[in-house]
Length: 241
Ligand code: GLP
Image (cartoon, rainbow, N blue to C red; front, side, top):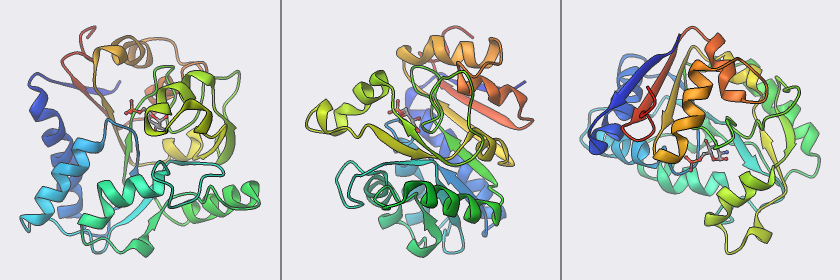
C-alpha cells in the first residue's frame, strides 16, 4: 500500500516534494535519480534550484536518468525533454551534464538506442524515481495496453496523450507520433518512487491507480506492487481519498 500524502496548501506541494528529493541527496551525495518531465514536477525542480542556491544541497556527484523522450525531435527542440530538463533543472544546479541521461530520440536506430539505455540502467540502481501520471494512467510514456513492456522501448503515443502534450508545441500536428520510454520493469526496480499528482482532472485516475485493480490498462496501478511508493497529492487531486 502506497504512502499517500495529501497537501492542503498548494504552495507546500512543491516544497514537500523537494524536501524528499533534497534529503536523499544530502544523505547520499552520489544518489541516482530517476527524473520526469511534464507540468507537475516543474515546481519541484524550482524548489530544488532554490535549495541548491542556498548552499544546502549539491548535485555534483548525482547521476540522473530520465524516463522518456520524443522520437524524431531534435535534441535542442524547445519541446524536447532534454531541453525541458536543461532549462528547468540542470542548467541551474551543479550537476555534471555528463551524468545526466535522457534517451536519444534522434538516434537513427531507435531500438538500438533503447538497448543502450537499458544497458546503462542495468549498471545503475535508481535510488529515487520521480513520476507523474497521465490522464489515462500512463507513467513515463507507458500507455494502457493489453500487455506492458518491462524494458526501454519505442511507443506509439495515444491520441489523447498527443493532445494533452500539444500545449508544448505550436499545434498537435507537431507532436511526434512516437517516443522512447523506460519500461515499467525499470521503473519498478527503483528503490523508492515519488509519484506527484496535482489538479482535479487527475483525481479519478490517481484514485483508480492506488485503490483499483492492478491492470496493464492503468499502468500506474502496477505501482501497488512496489514496496516503497509515496504518492504526493494536492487537495484537488486528492479529493477522492
Ligand atoms: C507526459 C510525460 C509523463 C508525465 C505526463 C503528465 O506524458 N511523458 O512522464 O507524467 O506527461 O504530465 P503533466 O504533469 O503535465 O500532467
